[in-house]
Image (cartoon, rainbow over all chains, first blue to last red):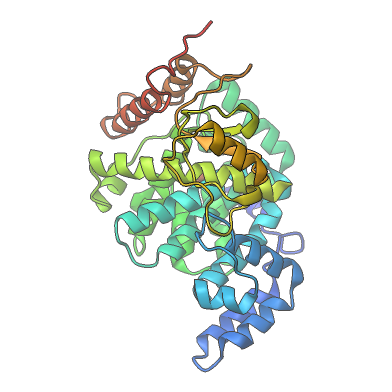
Length: 280
Length: 112
Ligand SMILES: [Fe+2]
Ligand SMILES: [Fe+2]
């Protein structure tokens, strides 16, 4: 009985009302593939979008990223690296959608992004910034559900409370799909790279992630730690189970987990301040 | 750790986060993490336009603050569905121990 689901997919993915990625990101993608293009050229493109520039500078100066007093886009690019600025551009434009929508989910996402970064660094993984971006975006499907099916969202929230179930179970009950799958659809239509789309699509089912299972596992663990911490509002009342596949994939241990939690909790104080500041 | 208005700062509290001039996050910290507050230091922070600081433990109680018991109860509820799962139970144990530790020895103000 896939009817309801494919019907919904059509509604949700209706491109006319789907948030689009700013053209800036596509231009940046093209430029950064061309070895010869300079940081200055790229900075010029970013600077042409004043809202985006303001956001990048704000993010680059935020304690969560650990850099201070970055006042120009080209300095931000030199300091942070082109990939980071691209990640920032991508996440900040998505956050524009999210921030207006729900502060609780924005805080949850920001915290999972920061936690993913801390875990990735602790495990000395490569592409920590990409992992952080994946963490930031992991629940983007929830934003789309809330934008496109606000009535269903009300029913989902009611089901979570009344039946004491996980949000994904409630989404399946009401919509026949869940935010991870919606996130997967969205990743496709935005042409996000696999290293972002896999964690988005499989952060609740790590074993399905083939190519980037390490990244997916990091986001899975980060999501659970943030839910355990009670920080922000993911929509879930209950902490989900840590999947054995993620634990094994990252070769976690009790000691390692305890160290991660300590570092993350330490950073969350700054994340809270940053979130309050950006809402002001 | 707790964020408090400088007005409520008292000697012997311990700074949990670097403090910067005028409540910003930039420049050189005027007072580093781990510093023990004194009356003269509090005066100095006032003159530097610092409004809030973050201190170790949970020294200031206000209406609406959760007691340690309440927090442990909330934590336990959040883990309701996974306490029997061996991996997730480890995370529960870590959070439980942290809460008890972070509220300080005298932080365990009992629920009224
Ligand atoms: Fe999720
Ligand atoms: Fe999440």
